[in-house]
Image (tube, rainbow, N blue to C red; front, side):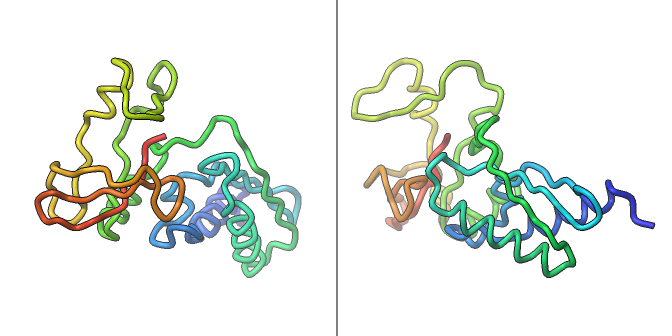
Length: 180
């Protein structure tokens, strides 16, 4: 007989294996957006999912993909709930996810510390405050050659969560997954 905990772990593994619709190189588990999976009754499952940001357009696709995968494995009723607290952070991306981003040619976000005190620094313009300068001055390494000599080309890239940068050493452009 399978225990509820073992079943929840298996269903979490299945739900977590779903690729992110915007970054298919990452699974939802590696991205850190899958919060929990709970068995509710004999054939019902509740999944808690936290989007990377509140207006994330990929949330619906993620939910549908989770429902499909779990139904393919015999779950009749799947409820995917959006959970906004605690908010998702780029610190939630697993080490494996960071490795995959780099291999895919995207500079992973710098780790800022999930439990860092105070507000998240947001650089909205060319001027910086002392509070955000430590984070902003941390180098973004090129995912191709590893150089810390990179420059910002655009604050936004193919998705709102990425910036476009260029390596000054190998001259390759690359996306940088911005820290949140």
